[in-house]
Amino acid sequence: MSLAARGRLARPPRRAVRARAAALLGPDEAAALAARLRAEGKRIVLANGCFDLLHVGHVRYLAAARQLGDVLFVGLNGDASVGRLKGPGRPLVPAVERAEILAALQCVDHVVLFDEETADGLVRRLRPHVHAKGTDYALTTVPERQTVRAAGGSVAIAGDPKTHATRDLIRLVLERFGKSRE
Image (cartoon, rainbow, N blue to C red; front, side, top):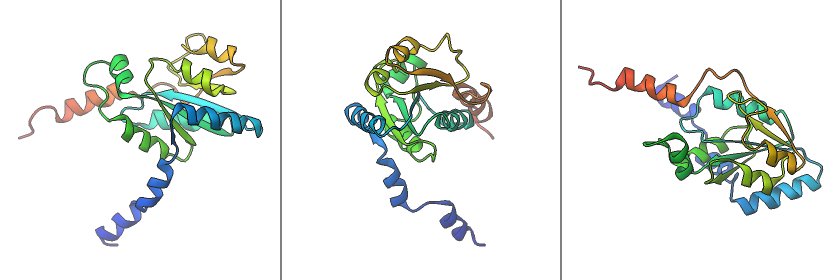
């Protein structure tokens, strides 16, 4: 098979990616949709994070979170909150692009941008049945746990053991490619 043919097979049609990107919602839209889905008897799951340089740990976390209900909303920290949480130079990938990447994942139903350090505001608005956090948390350390309980939901830890991190990818790239390679 030629390289050109392989490239055509590897890339989905542009309209397929754009159609999936429609999963990006504003907070008001997401709250209205969550209310409608809840009224239809759907079990709503909310996961959240920065998702800067998406890696396999992120994918496993989101896939495991999706298994906890019928619909997965992903709260995505906006650029300003990523900068506050992760420090100077972050995010590496702008929020709009991170949202498009997340929306392309089969396990993700909807992506909602937010600019706070925690997802408490999203929890209050969406009232998920389950708020899923990655394995870098314990049930007692989830920042939104009280808000989740107050909204009638539960907290779950999802994903595989925390052995992948964006900061480790950044360090690896710098080690391998940070100096000129003559």
